[in-house]
Length: 161
Image (cartoon, rainbow, N blue to C red; front, top):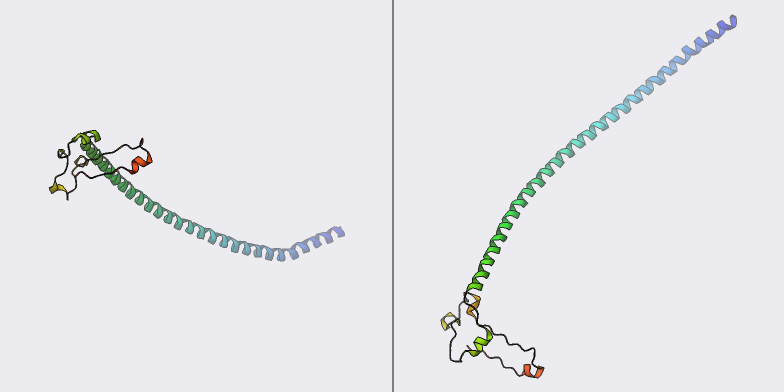
């Protein structure tokens, strides 16, 4: 019994003696944990704030891009309208050229007597003006594919106006 009593006293002494350093260790760990927790909380708050700023920045960029897209769509519509108008104008001009008086062929020009004036030749008063259509001017093409080089060199082109 005596041994048991001594043994119990020793355990009791170890428990009370060991409790004080363990309590300091617990407080130090708790204090260090609180400091780390505060640092992590501050870091999370900072990250959330940065994410909110980026969110607003991205929203502004998206709004700017949407405005630019709307402007480009309007410009594209205007250009498409202009192209359609120009296409119609060209079609009208081509149709008027095709329906105006037919051009004379080279054979018809060649058969015309030298002193005769064809009906679609410009007069002297219209020399300084621009022709109203392409048919106001005579064109003559001479086919020379079957001529030799010497024969081509001996050709003389004249202006009969």
